[in-house]
Image (tube, rainbow, N blue to C red; front, side):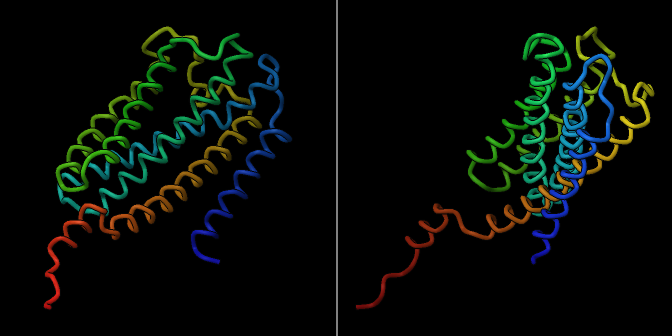
Length: 230
């Protein structure tokens, strides 16, 4: 069993434990009932996405300073995982909103700023895919990765800066009963571990991709090969 297989198995096992706690240990919310259980993974996925984008920020700064290929690969890997987790956050938030608000979507400050965050980093990935690989594309993407992180604190503080339908922070306000808080913290830890494993695997994929010459490079190399003597 390889190292990554063990990590994936551990991540899956931890998420199953978190799921069991959510459905069989956490008490039912007396106001929101069963839909409230989405909260545990919804918020945990958002926090894990923020962590991934923080990695993009740090790796992008490191690349601009040192032009390290490792930093660039790490930024690419973390950005992809961050977009996946933001997608999970948005989808689960919509499923949560329907029974509570009566609609899947409203142009609430928290929802809108989260959608903008998704668009920024999806654009980052699109840029990396369409641009010709090289120093210029990596530097431009690093700038996008750095300035894109500005939206993360906007998402977080949106519920306090503006009047929104989205509930305010319940963790730091001690609004959760001890059992719910315990389940949330476990779920958050498990989700962060899963995100770290996903980034590590994606980093390895990016490394292997960088080691394979692009079709353009292969074509140029083939054209430059001397013809065999007759």
